Length: 242
Image (cartoon, rainbow, N blue to C red; front, side, top):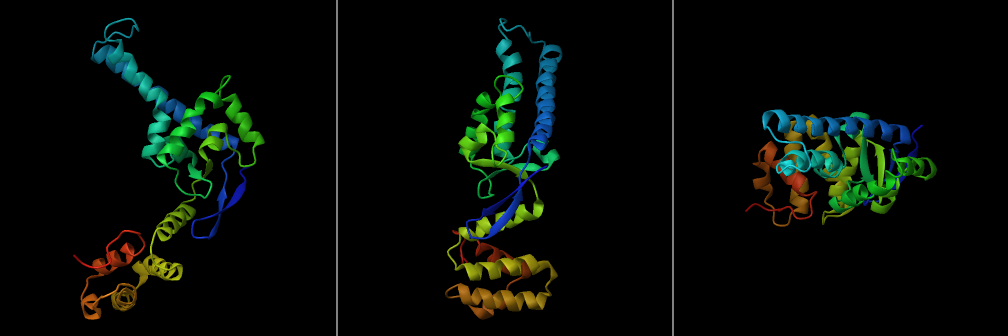
């Protein structure tokens, strides 16, 4: 049964994440293993029959026939986890993702370190060390996770969206109470009437953007008002036109 962990985001808000247990990890890995095996085999078939390349390791064209298949198989996890921000097709199907210990998205360096330690976790065979580690560690992590500072958690969409918003709030130069107000307005934006959007957004922007012209803000379109509010949540977003 999967367990839970309470993490504190960069803004100080506590969130509860469901840890992925050994069973869920194994399910995702098996799916990914089949995908990368099929990709490697598909390339070998293409190289052999369509491109007429030899699959003999000692042949002159071995580099073209065998190397791409090896790359597809062995670099599947590191490449896709970096590109998909902590996920792979198998993890997506299993409903899990890699996260930092604060629940955020791991850096490229963390993901690469995690994958480098697969060499240890896979020993002596069938990921025995990694699987045993998942059973005995507090957060159900393998050695690669411990080295990279990562966790494998259930990919709850609501929690993920909350973490993304909190990450955005943490990088802004505005006070936290103002940022929370902006975040609430943006969350309710689709349900607000146009007049209310103009009034609320115009009032807030006039208060937090130095030199803003209240009359000019009233003439902005709904899309422009939304974009200006969204810009307040980022550290380097412009706050005036031009």
